[in-house]
Image 1 (cartoon, rainbow, N blue to C red):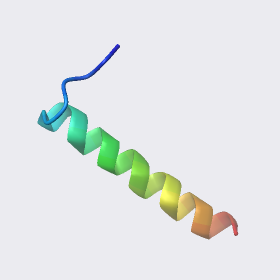
Image 2 (image 1 turned 45 degrees about the horizontal axis):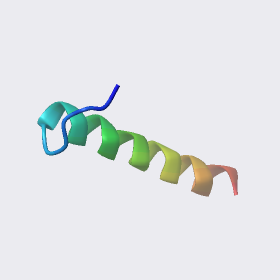
Image 3 (image 1 turned 90 degrees about the vertical axis):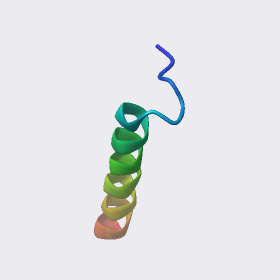
Image 4 (image 1 turned 90 degrees about the horizontal axis):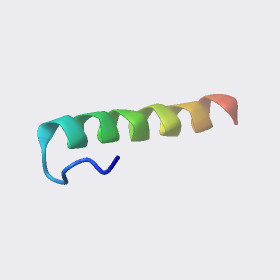
Length: 29
């Protein structure tokens, strides 16, 4: 599945996952 770039449904979850992964890295390390 390739989501449409630039669409809110793509950018929002993408940004959320990046924030979660970033906070997870700092929290673990």
